[in-house]
Image (cartoon, rainbow, N blue to C red; front, side, top):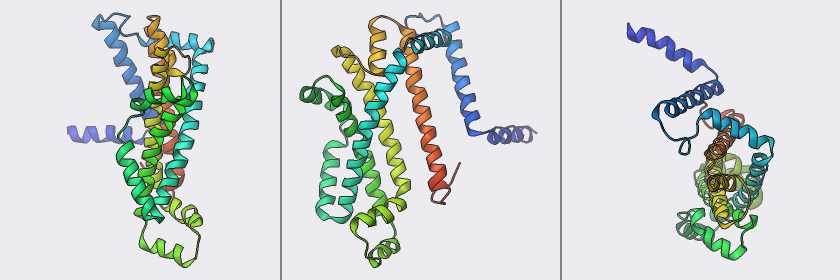
Length: 271
């Protein structure tokens, strides 16, 4: 009897739109957050409540602090990711057509892929100083290796028939990559892009926190560090909420791209 009653409930939940399921989960987390603040007796200097956080969020959106910080962070992220993705695709393409390229990618991956962007930040700061160039460089490092590794895997798992078609058509290497390999390896490339975005986003915020310590102003990381300096937990939580919201938004964008491409083309099963 219990099984028969639970089955319609599960079916109804699964029948809800994806965005609504996400909203319900987020609302449940906010309720848990509020209950913890209300009944645990935790100090407001340690954990800010959702209501106070929302007030700080509205205030700093109105005075322009948060929009300005978001714009700077996203600008550094987009520039760094664009350069990193371009270099990653170039390395993967070189690895596919050249033994030297394959060896080069293998060695570079072994040396650099395990290094977090934050780990090389002090050295990059010595090279370029306290400016946006430093953040862009560490973002390039964070984005390059996931996209290079996933694209290389995608290229090497393309079927022999597809490779023979490109060979028989007499396509140049550039056209082979653009017209044959990139579409065929799109699932792997999108997976690499999602990883590159995740690593790069964390690197941007972490680097900006370090810049805050060093005395420079900037994006969301600096905003959070500045709030810590002035003992303003609501602003810290507001910054964290914005970071999480942007992460959810970008993940939704990637899901939409997947639905419109590899899922629609039958290259991947949809949700």
